[in-house]
Image (cartoon, rainbow, N blue to C red):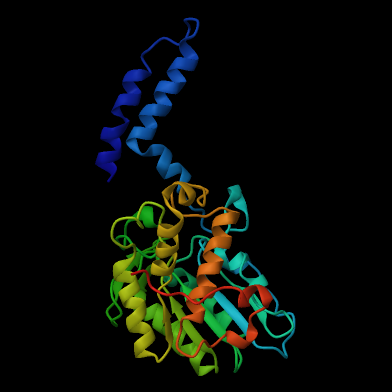
Length: 309
């Protein structure tokens, strides 16, 4: 990767030899350099660079009414982006679909998290401490879980493939070593611990990228692992990737383009609202429609998801 990046920067060094003193040269030079950077993917990398938030400094959202069941939402920036640079996650727009007099909705998601770092940074322990019998937990990871363990570009977020118990060693920037588990191991741990506390768990596959919904399907391997984890732990599985994909196919590419705030990962406010509707539709399609009695009038107006034919 480093060698490739070096090779791709070569054209910008050639451009720097052009004199910028001549009238009209500077704007033209800037445009040329922007075009070259875009072609090399440098601009994409800068825009798609997701900051790592210190989970220990992010307060856990308080439950408004402890006497009511709570829907705990666990995930990454596609679930909660906080409005930064016009980006919002579906978890930030889902509360109006539930009756606040019957259920609390708490969004525990943090940007830049993988299943691995949500666990290792202690965020999951804080969430688990709030779970009580009768609660519901939706867990969605995947956008930050892929990549090679040990690659600095992955910022110590990548986890192992599959759902097994095997581990790999990763060296952190401070020199310490970490035994990294598989994606399914972390998801299974969240699921098992939430169920042990009396919650109904919904394991959820990630929302698709803007580039990966028209041809084939996004997150195929991860969705498969999510399904296996859910089955192994007697939990529910929501293939949100497909629910959103089918919705995108209905509204068309031009409309989908407007639902993203960046190159193809994070959604706008409208995109977050669209995906929140998809989540509600998907939940209604689950066996027994477990959250049926908690939806608001707005939620009642959403039809259950039915796979596209």
